[in-house]
Amino acid sequence: MAGLYFHIPFCRQKCHYCNFYSLATRKYRNEIFEGLLKELELQQNYLGKEKLDTIYFGGGTPSLYEPEIIDELVKKAVEIFGVNDNPEITLEANPDDISPQWLEKLSNTYVNRLSIGVQSFHDDDLKYLNRNHSGNEALNAIELAKKFGFNNLSIDLIYGIPTLTEDAWKQNLNLVSQLEVSHISAYALTVEPGTALDQLIRKGKFKATDDGDAHKHFDIIVEHLIRQGYEHYEISNFAHPGKYARHNTSYWTGEKYLGLGPSAHSFDKVSRQWNVSNIKAYLDGVAIGKLNFDKEFLTKNQKINEYIMTSLRTIWGMDLIKVEKDFGHDYMTEIKTQAAKYLQSGRLEFADQKLMLTQQGKFYADGIASDLFFEDE
Image 1 (tube, rainbow, N blue to C red):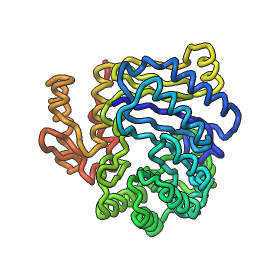
Image 2 (cartoon, helix red, strand yellow):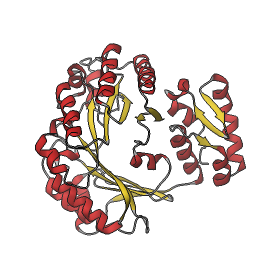
Image 3 (cartoon, rainbow, N blue to C red):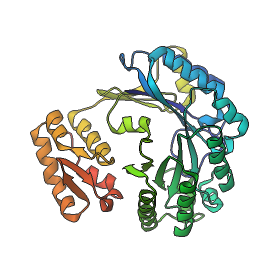
């Protein structure tokens, strides 16, 4: 049940809110492709003997590469690691990259799932975010993808944008329902320090975000999509039955995964490592067969904290029987004690020996989880 992630660190232009490692340049694109092929070979033992269940191309903007390039990377990965039956192979794409010609080529590759970065169907929102497409282009991209057989389709949406009214947000969600998109990832706009958006807000050039608006938008999307038959299986993710994102679900359930490319993270259940966030340094390391990465071996407290964080975000909740089995009785007792105030306030609920966030608690998931964390001495 292992996963493989390729980080493609290129974009046509940087979105104002983005803090992922990516560059708006064409330089090094061929070198990164060759580097990823080489890193596959260098990391061939990382997953042990586990075959791949999922492959995910993220970024950055993987759709900047021609489908033939993507397919070569997939074929090399399958050759090295092997693959389980019916693998999920996802490619992130921006609407402005999606054309009939591109989709025709992509339909002849291993890729069987598309994740389209829509963010909004309203041009005012897209301008605020510095996206490189229009609302109509986003709509056309979804319709084209389905026309070419990509029915296992996910789209990203952002809420809490200062330009996004409640009516406009509802219009976005109505379009999603009408288009019968099977999976939606929806994220509150977060102003990360050092991003262009952070600077623009500090200088008074852009309106600041409002947590109250984001909270309203969150309640609206949950109510709307559940009414339309979607399952709210993770804080930021909604899907038709049977259409959960298998790759991302493996992160939340603690499966092994290998990340390739600059800044990509890997996890083998014992340690976590992350490649250098610099294209030149990454390529220099790959060239001499010595990968440039940092690594940490997880302590017991770090492992339980990761389980608390990821499990509470999901529909399955935190299994206290598992906590006792994997970490010990004292950990389970402490979690119960710390969770009591959230059970009383109605932000957590307890059933079948599992702690789960209520609808009221979901918007505060990160804060609740961190309050349950254990500190290393």
